[in-house]
Amino acid sequence: MKVFNQKIIIKFLLLILFTNCEKEVEIDLPKYQPELVLNCLFSQDAVFKVHLSKTAPILNDFPVIVREAIVQLYENELFIEELTFDGNIYTSTILPKTNKNYHIKVNTPEFENITAYDYTPSKPNLISVAFNENAYTDEEGYEMGQLTIEFKDNPNKKNYYEIVFFVKDNNSFFTPYYDEKNNDPVLLNEEILAYEPESLMFSDELFNGTAYTLKINSGNLFDSNDEPSELNFIFRHITENYYKYKKRLILHKYNQEHDVWDGVGEPISMYTNIENGYGIFAGYSEITRIIKSN
Image 1 (cartoon, helix red, strand yellow):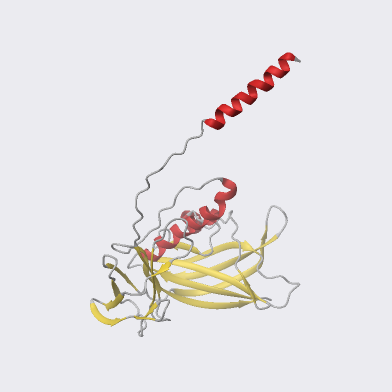
Image 2: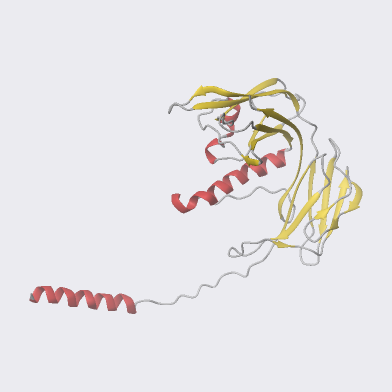
């Protein structure tokens, strides 16, 4: 009993000791310096819409809109117009033109001037697109679908593409999941399937200047028990800036969504083509198709 009491006393004294060893440490954090952020993805089908904000401290979840700015747009280095602000975004009155170079300049009282360049690529040369509802059976016995896209690549330049597809069913929308065991060499070469991308991006590195048939394995997008569904397919010809930005964005989103259970993910530095700032100014063009269920 005496030994037992001694152990209790020792534990009690250690608890007091460690409690009294707490010490407040003041950390001298550097003064936060905000930066200007410009985001604009543009195509021939809509006017320029520029979202202008500034970076915020890590505990601030909402972007701070920059309202007092002069946003000027140039086409092939010729001044076109000054964009107007509607309380949320800066908007042009003109539509981008195919294969034209665009330059945007932003002047604000608070920040150093920022600028960015990109162009509007031509429409992709889509030959055909089809969806096979029962292309194969996976290891667990489920029937899997396959989207087949045939297109022709321009041999005169380096090209980049993006594919988006989703199903509209009973006035609701949902995007497919991609089979990580997809064996198309072009998609495997991009190494993004494991990061749950909302869209698929790829370059013409493996098929430059030729016609190519891309096969995307996914879950069966049409449920025979429901009313007829339709698959909305979007095929984009994108610029290199667009391609680099969206690929980094996929990794960034994946890390943010998975670090709760998997531990803190590696920091992902976002790609930007904005001089003296952050964000993206990049062009694309697209073709859309609708595929109905059988």
